[in-house]
Image (cartoon, rainbow, N blue to C red; front, side):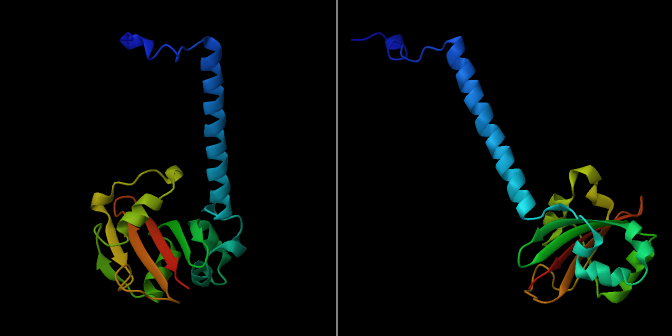
Length: 172
């Protein structure tokens, strides 16, 4: 009968072996980070590079009033066939007034079917809002009924700070 520690004697670690394992692990981790950032860039997730790339719905809201571009911070989430973006603006902005006037909205809350997507999509550099006191509005049927060729919105407004976050989706 062999001693119990004899089974593990072939797994002796040396400094050289540990350095090799650390190096290989670091290379694997670095490759994963590179791959994920490449895929993210391919999906075009992140801040828009220029106004021409902004969602058509947002460009229509701005219209000829180019000064309104400074009122909004759009962030692209997905742009394959369907387009999804998230915007941040202030409730005092005329752009927010236009959004509310030009689109039908119904009251919603943080239990809306798309609310989790909005909350998870907020970029980290925007900070993590405390959603409990926010006011919510949504396009009727958004998240429960399939609607293609329409601009769909979920809007969250913080009455304390005036910050507004809009999840916009256009389904082809």
